[in-house]
Amino acid sequence: MVYSLWVYLLSCPEQPVPFPWERCYDLGTDVLFYKNAVYGTIVIDLRPRINLGGGLFHDNSMWYDLTGRSSHYQALFRDYQHDQDSPFLLYTNCCGSLVYLVVPELVQHCPLCGCFVSFFG
Ligand SMILES: [Zn+2]
Image (cartoon, rainbow, N blue to C red):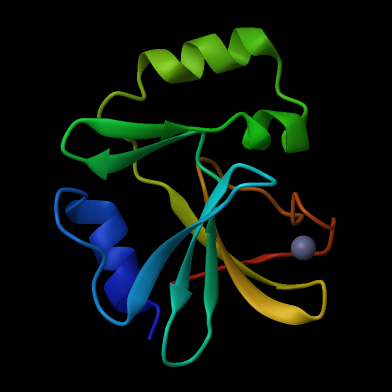
């Protein structure tokens, strides 16, 4: 079910988000996420830079805030971030419900709540 969105995130940011997924934006946290309109599944995109297509990017420092990465690391990371490296898809039982996390690097613990995460695929 999450697979179509995952393929989309990996390969075709210039296309619209595949149905029944919707791209959502949380104004309070400045975080992009995707919601499955049929099943209600949530995929939170924690990548520091997200290609929205058409030359638009969404920058979000939340990943660095959550993982405590230094600004030096951030600068290095951004340098090779133009083409968007392949992210990782994790899933976790976060705050009582199953959520998927799109992250720029593998982590063992959910950056949101600290619980263990599993690698998808
Ligand atoms: Zn969590």
